[in-house]
Length: 331
Image (tube, rainbow, N blue to C red; front, side, top):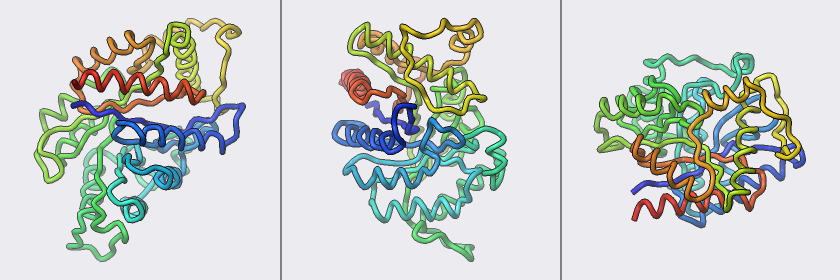
């Protein structure tokens, strides 16, 4: 059975306040909580006025306090910006406040541009060093105090489940070596998904955490109720992608009228064709066909989808349609 989850970066648009952006994020979590979604992740990101998820633990705690069932966690914590000790303290605290509802995705990228990363960086992580850091974090969460002079309370023994995040093939080896779930960011690294999943599955070592490999695939999703809505959402999704690519533009997201937008340049068209990540869009039938193709090509255990649709009713309708597609496929 394939599970379905939501990833959110708490996008902010020019015509709304920060509070309104956070309120939409909470409402979306409550929507997912009331339905069959497995988890709701918030991603750490820095130096972008259009993304409000930088203080990730604060946002997650706020969301945990206003939901009841769904697992809530980081997708993910960017480990270069934190020590394993600090991560264990913070997520152990959340687990104590909201038992059995907190999970944790860990990545080794900074989650920002190079200039900001130099301000944030506590450490850099090559593959082996990242592996050692995850081992230490597992030791904390397992409550193994052997050889430790200092321990992160209340993280010790908290049992917070860890998923390894990746957008390249290196992290696949780490997840396989430790026998942990593996989540690949197909929404912005589409060309190496299959290779990374193959490495993970081929090298997987059974652990006390997993008996068999468990893969999560990240995609973007913008599905419309009809052709007109689908076309407008596709236009908006393309604009968001191009905005994210524009590293010199640190402004908030805009709602652009498709009838009053400049024609795409040849470079923008090339970027959309060559660099855009895995995306599920169009109408129900379009989305169903795309989903079935992804399932056939990648064989994932869980799909985690991100969307930047600003209108809440269209945002939830898109996720409702995706949920229906996944649930019908599970029958």
